[in-house]
Image (cartoon, rainbow, N blue to C red; front, side, top):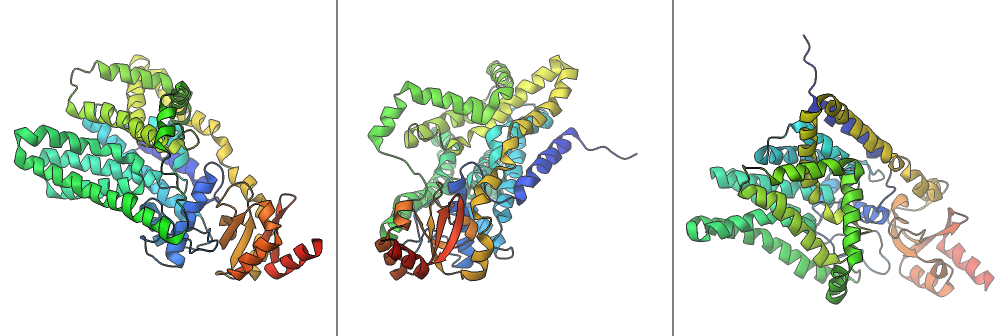
Length: 469
């Protein structure tokens, strides 16, 4: 008799199935400028130099494109795929994020099994119903990669603490180091190392030295990149940080003290992460775990400490700036999934038939609510429909192009896979400015007319501008 696939396998298969259309479509939709800038770094690693210490974006202006940003862990993985895949495609970036998303699901199940007796099917169900996780799973951004490595490092650190296996210690260092380098906002996962260091400091000083050395060697690459090398790149090459890394301290403090910030925070967690479908289950799960008689140190550190520290880190670095960049809270995903999974498990134990139905209804409703992401790229790529073939035929790969900004900085260059300037309407119609870009190497101009791009050689564009004066 053929063995039927488990419910967990069916849910994972469903998640893969609904992500496949997103895997093959061009960049579009939410955080499009961020995706385009990230994709350009990955592509330029393969096209120009596989040197992660000098990451390049497509916006060149009079510079080299080298910019200060997060350490390109994710971009390097995508760049490796670009060594064998066409650099005109976006699927390598989508694929890496999707693989990392499955890795995040796996480590969430492992951590849930370590902390609580929750059936895997409910953890997976709640994970794929978290809106931000669903969206980030195929976006060309480093969030899934950072979360995967941070969770991997945390899990193997706990295993090392319990078993003393040096392989787990190596994996803990590797995961936490790469995770924090890829995205500083996942640094809260390092709390588990800090707590163990403090506890063993008096009880077992020799063992505490191992934890201290682990923490220091994780922090050194982070400090060198974000406080030494990244600022050096921005100062030396002229291109400022293309990736938000904070604001003025007094502005952030003012934001934190504002009631509006906390309202935005609640909306972000309730809508962008849990969504209203999961909120009741998250509350049930929280109440159940609060009364858990088997509560141990790991529960406090991982289920309370890391989520709270995540909020502290994000708010102290950004103030209320997180609202348009909800992915800063990516570390909350596993914990919300565990809380929701516990709530669903309790609901199923009380209402078995309704619980089994919810197991399939909730993922279907999640996809229904997020249907808009499937055609999102169509609207964004429409201005380039007629000009792409012309660019491919006439514009050499290394030709610099001046592109009129269509409202999403960086993305204006991404569909044509060329480098150069992204400028305003006033600048693209300014004879002196265009003349300067010609001296700096610009060869083509893309002008936005009635919602469509038109390609001009820079010499013909200058003649047109001259005749209009």
